[in-house]
Amino acid sequence: MFKISLPANGPKPGYYDAYVGYLRKILDYQGIEYSLEGRAIYNSFIMKIDGKDIVFDFSDYHKFQRDPSQYQTYFKFHYNKQKHGSFKNVYSFTPISFYTWDEFYRIQDEINYTCNNSIVFNMQEPRHNAFERRTFVQDMLKQRYKNNVVLTHNQSQEIYWKTINNCLVHVFVPGARNDMLDRGQLQCMAFGCCTISPHISDSVACDGDLIPDRHYIACDRDYSDLIEKIEWCKHNRKFCVEIGQNAKRLFNETSTPDKLWDWIVRNENVC
Image 1 (cartoon, one colour):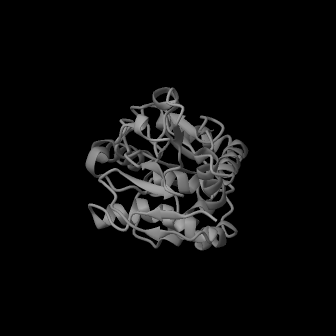
Image 2: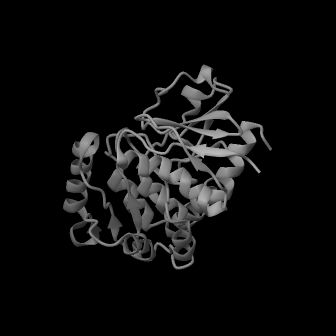
Image 3: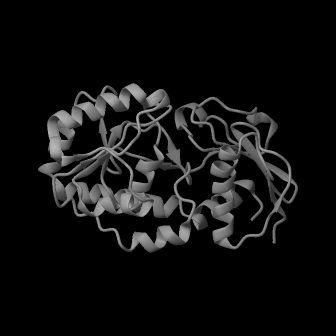
């Protein structure tokens, strides 16, 4: 048994609940005991395993929030192999996906993406760094697809996820960075849905790479070919289903609670 501790609080309740809470839910689902002590800072926190400090850097940006040379093990939520791969003690970690894992596994059995109609979903609120991009894309989709596009997200989380059962594709415009893995996109991938977004430069845990045309469909950064990509989906539905299944397989191989805990322990060299 390991002696594990996580921060008891942080600078903002929302940040603490989101990021430390995500890791707590992973441990809770695995039945792993831990204590709460210390404090998270704005964009990172420390988990202790048998007295060893393990950093979890959850910044949306590629810049390190702490000096990685000061730590034996450093996990980066938005890990980029080109920018971070030269640091031998820095590892990828899957960004926030789900908090309620029992609900995820229950609903996973109720979702079956078949690419069975022409409805396009882009249910993201235009805000912060993504305000202009998301507004631009939603205006484009409304003009082209009119009644066959859904842009609002005022349903329950479960109903939102189940839109996957009756859609052509989900389109995502990332938030802080136009090349980051969006939480909603990651959730759709986990449920086996084909998604469209600009190129994703982030990796998930276990050195998992998100590969265009295998795990998702990549459009241009300026979304100039987005309509072309959507129309392609209409004529390649079996391939869209295959992309969704590839994404689901990658999630199950890298980003479930058991895989994430094994990844932490393996790279901390305590197993």
